[in-house]
Length: 318
Image 1: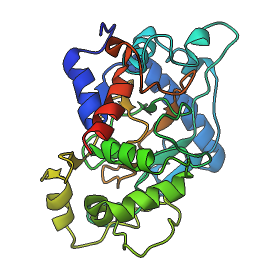
Image 2: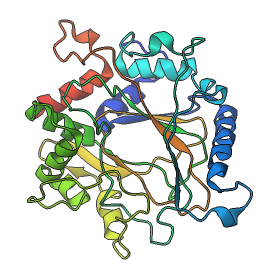
Image 3: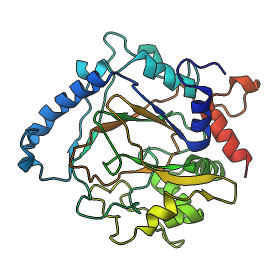
């Protein structure tokens, strides 16, 4: 498969680990200009950029999407071509209007992490682990998400509130959705995965008897961080677990710079993390819906996208 932006090794990383880090997906100066725009919105909530005494909330939410010019300039051809490198050329629903005059892309929502969990030792959370799409049924070939884009608008170092991702977890989810092919809603599907897979069960502190997920997105105050439980860092981040299907699973931080984007598999488990840096973290999530369902039965093997290959490799190994 010929690609425009991503290298062969990056494509293979996406297939095997479930994500790829695209540096400078849009210019740093554009990301920082967008951040300035967001500060003007935060100030409407009484949080002042130059007055740290007003930073009295660990997490500030801007529950809006914006189409201002500060965000439209982030719609670069580099990012668009990288998306199609993964989902397949001509298969991204919004590519035809991308960057066109009069058709503006919406950016948001914005969970701005000022100091979530800063009062507790940094650790691997138990709550908050999920994949996206709470309001729709999930199938192994669903088109609605396409990719999850984690778009970064500030400098994010280690222990600075980056999104935690569970490498390889997209393979586990592919198998769950292939087996439960009636289209469970996300909450049900996530709980099935949490109960049935030993590593996920331990990661999320789920009991086999648990019947429901309660507030899977709730991690704003890092409620899952347990003081004195640093063995979770060793267990989940410093060691790679190989499950019964041979899938390699590990939790990683995703440090990044303004203008970077992480292109993530739609089935990838991820969670918020604690911010110990003292610097607010600005980012948003975006979906890149497909124009139709993934085709997992193509006549020509060369026509499979890396996204489709990742699913096929996962379900064929069980």
